[in-house]
Length: 114
Length: 115
Image (cartoon, rainbow over all chains, first blue to last red; front, side, top):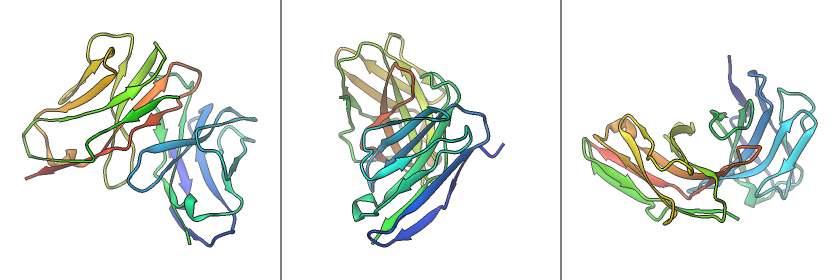
């Protein structure tokens, strides 16, 4: 099993550009999450999904869009990149979403917007 | 909304010493979970320990233990016999008991274990 795979690992964007951060998992997990980690800070939830076709906002959704057309994939879209979106982005997944279940994290995508 | 506060930005101890990391949180929920995550320089997020709020007994995992004080909304992590591999950022996190693992993280404590 590859676990949770995020691509790319690093990216530099210019202000106003758009891009999609990819996240895929091969564990047949129903729940998937996107977090961002600003420099020197903890992670904050952007969006999450409880299954294919179902997404919901987290704590900091502004400036982002998501879709969940398959169980495996949960891409995060930045439409108009801003310097405030410079961060490390983590994707995570779990099967049932229960608190005592292990949450699997990807290795992160480091994004710089200049 | 829930908040998690870690008041120690950085800590440093000698190898084999015991160190305690502090965490306080604010919530009106009665049922919830608390976590400590470790993030080494590799950026990997590693679960260290988990505590269910309804359990009075403090959780332990080998050299790691917590002091959970529900009334005081305090959740500290004690690392015994610290090792060089314990050097990392440590995050305290809160989760409501609901249908998704929506974690609220503290700002983190950078722990350095010196040889």
